[in-house]
Image (cartoon, rainbow, N blue to C red; front, side):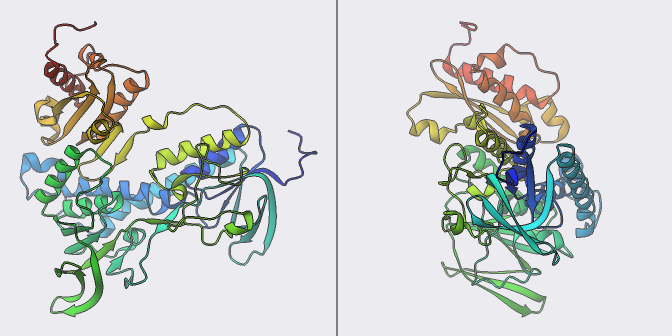
Length: 478
């Protein structure tokens, strides 16, 4: 690797060490480039490892285990593994997993010879970053031929809301909670709000979920969302949809310190704690983007083209900082693709087959298009469904409300979408994803033998259900 004729300090500088930044840096290193990863926090991994994906999913697993959620079907609603579950019980598992993930990340970066710099980065010009080292370590400038911004997001804070980290929190504050509230109101029923609302409800907290939209998670298949709403209500969650918050105030009453929420409709909610989850804002305020010729939208997000290039062609942006879908899995892929494109390496990726995993309780996962999208596009489709209660494995694991749904073309029978709610949804989805990637038909599932008893058998049951609706069960293999 000769760098003699390289006028820059690095071939690639990556800002941010979350999933997108890690993958971009490692891909750059695999292409024999000189790469440095800049992270302003003292720990690696970004929001994903430290306050977002990994902790929330670990917390969810601890909630399911300690609350006896999976066993209630057999041992009754009063069953739980531990009588009084504390925040410490839940976070013990989280801390262990976070430490391990940070170690793995650091080892992976070192193994691939990525230089890790602990500093806050800001642009001087399109090829130059100013690095302010942590803890008064001075500053320097670094130049690079290509720069990838992977700075992620932070919880959006409305300046009218009295955030105190104890009674009025963002999702970033959950991991420093001292104790579980008796009542919780979640404002904002997006993915994060929905996940935390369902987790706390599973622990027996009385949850109210407020959102100004008329339905939860509008990008998810309607029937799947109806099932989720039913589950939440079964777990004593009050859904306040089509409602917006007028004001939030801290109050004291007979029960101690509480929070009062006034809704625009005139309703009031008094609650022990409020989780304010009205979306996330791009971590771009301190990057001095204008010096590089870049601007963001009103949520601090950076616009990019299909190659993740910003309007300055040597600067890319990947991960949550570019907006939807803001999933660790898609962010990793974006990082890889951006690094390859930056150095002229051809790649193939199929964004329309990216799966989505939403870790509510029960979890939701999907790939391909949903019924609403197919209807809008005028595509003739048929539906095949399997309910977990029809499957032996569903009975065994105690999930009798799960649902797997296949959407396929009415004439060609090509698989167009898979939508699942229930135990193991985010694992099961990959079977459907693989079949779709090869352009497979619904017949594949009819002709395939699955292990018994497994939840994967839902695919076969759903396929039979679908082809029976076509009235053409006799002409397989045509």
